Length: 540
Image (cartoon, one colour):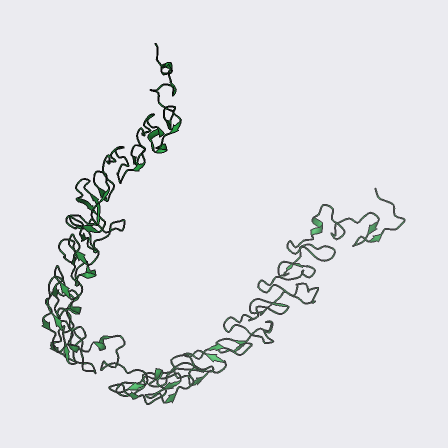
C-alpha cells in the first residue's frame, strides 16, 4: 500500500512510527528530548508530542508535575486542578486544603472550615475556652477535655477539685482535700473538728480534739477530761481528782482524800495515813499488799526508821537489817552475835557467825569448838568438839577415837603429814595404809608370822584389805595367809602355795627336788650334785 509506514507493523515499533510511544523519559518526533517533568512524572513518562506527564507521583500536579499538592491528607491531588482527592491534613480546609483552620483548631470541616477538633487543652465551638488545669492528665501526661462540654477526658480531677469540668474546689475541711467527682462529698472523711458530707459542721468543744463523726456531739475520741455521757454534756463529780472522769463518769485519776467509789461520791470507811482509801471497799488497800508501805497504818517502817509516820531513826545500831518496831522502837531481830530488846547483849559461846534467841540468848546453831548445851556454856571434856545436845565427841585430837576420844588409833597406821589419825567411829586409818606386818582398815591385825619377808625391805608384809601374804610362805607352810602346814615337802622344805604338796613330785620325770626323784647318772645326794665313786659299775 503506497504511503504506509511499515515500522508501525512491527510488534514493538520504533520512533519512525508516528503512533509509537517514546522510550521512558523521552518525547518528540525523534524521541530524543528528555521529558521536562523528569522523575516527578508517574513512571517518568510523558506524552510524545506535548511533553505532558502521564500522571504525577504522589504530592505533585501540573502538566509537567512541577507543582506540589497543598496539605492533602492522602498526598494525592488532581493533576490539572490540584484539588485534593480526599480529606485535608489537620489544620487545613478548602478544595485544595490551602486554607488554615481557625486559631486553636486542630481539625476543621474540609469545605466549611467549621472546627471539629480543638487543640489539646481547648474547647468550645471555636475552641475559645481552655480546659481546666485541674483535670487529671491522661496517661500520656496531656490535659484534654470534651470540645462541647469541657468535661475532662480523664473523668478525674487533681486532689482538691470536683465536677466533670474540675472547676469547683473541694471543701478545705475534707481530709486530704479529696472529694467525690460529681457531688463534692468528702471521700476520705473530714479533718478533725468537722463533720458532714461536705465537712461543713463544727464538732462540739466537749469532744477530745474536737473530733466527732456524723454529728457535733458524737465524739470520736471521747469526751474532754471534765465531761462525760453519750453527748459529753455532763460534768464530772467535783470529788474526782482534778475533776477528770471517763465517758461513764468514772473518776480516772482517783478521788480527793476521804472519798471513794467509781464516781467518788461515797465517804471512806477507814483511811491510810494520807487520808485516802480504796476505790472499791472504802478502806486502806495498801494494808492488803504483801509488803505494804508506811501508807498502811499497821505496816512496818523502812529499815532504820520508826514512828507513826516512819520519820524517826531506830535507836540501836545492832538491829538486824537496821529494822525496829514502828511504834515501840524495839529491834525486830538482831545482828549475828547479839540479843536483847535493843540487841545490846552479846551471845555467849555460840559458833561464830550464828545467831541466838533475841529473848534469852539461847544459841540457834552450833556451839564454838569445845562447848555444848542450849546456851553453849558447858565445856566438852576429852575432845576438841562435841555434839551440842549430848556432849559426845565429834572431833578428837589426832591419834584418838571413840565417843569420848578414849581410845588410841593403831600405831600401825601410816601417818599423814607426820601424824597418825583415824576415823572417830570406825578407827579406820585416815591414810588407808598400814606399816609392814599389819593389815585391815584399822591396822589392828598382824600379818601371819609364817609370811615370807620382802627381798627389798626384809620385812613381813601382807595385803591391806585381805591379809594375804605379799611374799612366799616360810618353809613348811602354804595358803593365802601361810597358816596351813604343807602335806608333803620338797627337799628345799617348801610346798606349792595353793596345793600344799611338792609340785615337782607331780611331774612325769621329777628332778632332784622331789625326794623320790632320780639323779642324773653318775651323781647322787640330796641335790644330785655329788659324783659317784670311779670304781662304781653301772647297774643294769
